[in-house]
Length: 322
Image 1: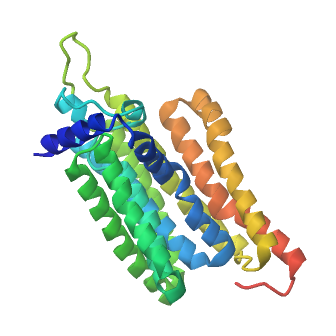
Image 2: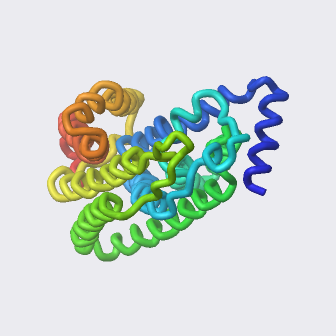
């Protein structure tokens, strides 16, 4: 049934001569490369907690998704059925195993967290509907492009919802017991390394093709796992540093401050383009991706907030809060 659904979408794509394919590719790309910029901007400029909520939910999914992917080891649709022909450049950009959908479990917590935050004020509620719709659109785009089954997307959305619920309760708990956060961060840090050990030593399918080669190279499938868990490692370190020593407050004022925060987003994109290849060339694809992901998370959780704090002191020295 899942394959038939993808074949139906494939027939529709062909009948439309791929007219909608570029848009669906844009949605998929935006979900994993650009959507995160929105909660980061909120974290820097508007409200620290409202930014942390989708980000922590995202990191929760970034740990669980690769663990599930590399445990289930479910092949992509075109490997399971040769009739599936992914659209456009999707077959190259769809890395890792199929289940669950990483694009969906990325868009879900980021857009879902923003939807919850914007729901609190009546005037911003239309944005909540827009973010919620984007989650569904991102999931559908993976089906439309032929790179994920409906089950992959459904589980990605389920993980997102669970992460949003659990993180909401966790943040409420930490509001009442802030002294517990360091221990939680330490536990998450150690759990990440346990996850790296697990995906490194567990067994993987060794199915061979007709030419005698592996249908899927397990080492390539592990690559995203190192990168995703590296994001969580970077977050745990950055959050500890920011909470203990930086303690910045969002600028919350003026177009100049907003422009400054927008400018701070540009290095997030440049680092991916210029720093990631250097690190992966030096350390290899697995460890290079892990180290880069940790550095990337450290930049927007702690390093740029440090710059904002120093700038904020110059703009209004009285704005100092613990």
